[in-house]
Length: 167
Image (cartoon, rainbow, N blue to C red; front, side, top):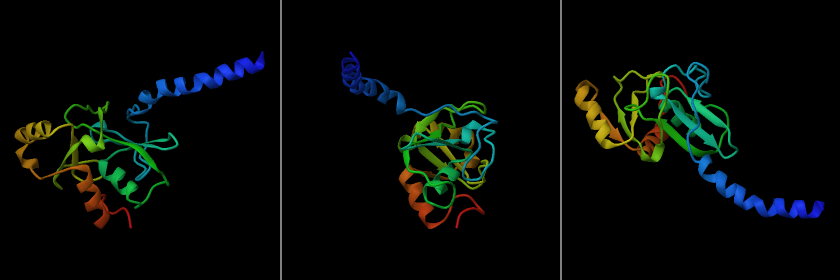
C-alpha cells in the first residue's frame, strides 16, 4: 500500500512542477515602508523607483533604486547572491505605494543626474520607448540618455552607479 502511494507521488511530481513553473517567473509583491534595500539598507518609501532580484534559491531582494540593484549585481556591496530573475518598476504605471514590475531586459531607461531618485542615481525605467517619450514630453527638463539594461551594466563596470557607495 505504501509503495503505491510513493509511486503515485513520484509520478505526479513532474506534473506539479510543470504547473508551478509559470507562477515562479513573475515579480513578487513589494511592501512599501516595510521592505529594506539589501545594498544601502534604506526602507523603500516610493515604489516607482524600485527594483527586485529573485535569486536561484528563491530569495527575493527589493531595492529602493535601480542603481542599488546594478551595484549589487556588479559586486560593489550587498550580500552574495546569484540572480535568476531581475525586475524594475515601470515609472509610468507604478504608484508610490505599488510597483508594476517589468523584466530588466524589456525596460527602457532614462538617465539624467538631475532626476531625483532615492539614491541620487537619476535612472528611471519605462516599459516601452513610447512611454519614455511621453514622459519626456511632459518633463523636457529631464531629457537625458536613453539606455538599455546591458548598457547600464557596461557603464556600471567602470564606476559604481550609487554615489558614495561601492569600491
